Image (cartoon, rainbow, N blue to C red; front, top):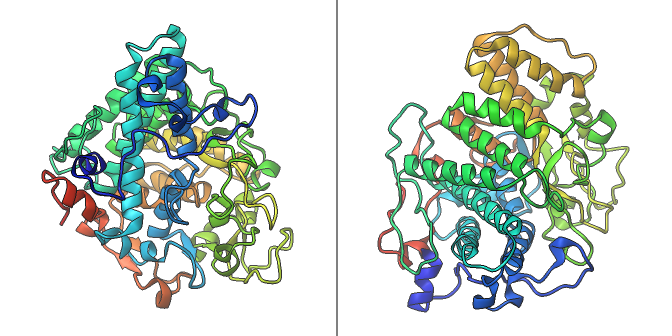
Amino acid sequence: MITLNRMKRNLTGFLLLLTMSFSFISCGEDYLDELPTDAVNADDAVSTTSNLLTIVNGMHRMLYSRDGGQGYGGLGTWHVYNEALADDMVLNGNSGYWFGAARWIDHRTDISGYVAHHWRFFYKLINHANRIIEGAEVAEGIEDERNLVLGQAYAYRALAHFNLVQMFGKRYNAGGLNSQPGIPLMLEVTQEGKARSSVEDVYAQINADLDQAISLLTEKRTNKSHFNKAVVQGLKARVALVQGNYTVAADMAAKARAGFPLMDQETYASGFNDYNVGEWMWGAHLNAEQQDTYLNWMAWMSRNFSSTNIRTSPKSINSKLYDLIPETDIRKTLFSPDGEHPDVTLLSTHQKFPYTSQKFLAYNTGDSRGDVVFMRAAEMYLIEAEAKGRLDDFAGAQEVLTELALARDDNYVPSGNTGQALIDEILLQRRWELWGEGFRFVDLKRLNADLDRNGTNHNESTILTMFVEAGGDEWQFIIPIDELNANELMEQNP
């Protein structure tokens, strides 16, 4: 791979490190605050299952830790990037890190730092997962602990390959051969570069890893930063939806959301910053010692924190999408049509734009902390409803959709829709529900839908790109130049 080849060639900058790059922070007894991997030498790291847990903990911390520059912040960076590429989130002003993405220039540039970050970040996760998988069989320790670390590793390897193939591969064509180039499958710790596997083969491995993780994990976990069986079932539902395996998607989504009650409307409007909320299935908790003030999720996506990004370029909802939300729906209250936000404390330096979001709120204007959501039960309801609708189980789809919709809008009345009209209704609910959480670009890609920002509050003079037809080469990320230079087997995207 790119960085492992570079170790061999003594190149710099893009290393898929064998050890974590986190400094040691002692924060009491919390499971996530054990020694990160860089405090354990390479041999000792895999000698016991307890030491393997330190690698797992470092992987969890990678999801919200700095990996280079100001905008390179683990999984959250990918989620913001997904929204910037799409149509439902509007970037205001001229500052911020994602205008290159919004203009559809950045992800098509082989020297892009963001593209390099995504590639490096996910392959780094894969490399750590492979170290755990290779080391677990011979590591000393109890069986339950071995199953725990292996289950986490297989889940991470699947998650990383899944996100990478959605970026760098062509869309999965349900019912097709899917022999188009995907990404290199990395299933061992090696210094040898790999050629790109087909999209079909990548998805086969993703599913195999998820099945393995499900077999190893239980519902028990220390906190919501960790995978458990339900979260991996949720990942399996996401993958099945992309592949058009709707029976699997519906089944996995229903199993995954069991035990995670939908939040009430007061909680829904409280700022999306507490991973203890019952609906949150998986997320990251930021404590004062571990947070990175200007790299935190809320320093990018909140309305109230006092960063240049938030003050001068807050995020808005697509005005057309906003207009479609019923007045009685709690989700409409998360956006301010005049940008004033009377219930949110803003400084005089916070610039005002129409339709700005207050879905995500930092602890206060001077503290950018706030937990980061990676999976919620509502997503599982939407996957289950869509999958059942596509299987022509219209009654079942409407039942699931109604339960979610009533939780958000007391006045919701089931439409009685069937066929494509029902699918369209579910997809619209998905846009309202998951706004800003990192799904829109990959949804457009899986649906083979055009990007269309025309007639909205997107500012063409700053965004430049207002329409992209579905299915073209532009929907694939360009492979980073450093990977091409380091790996002679790598094939660039058109």
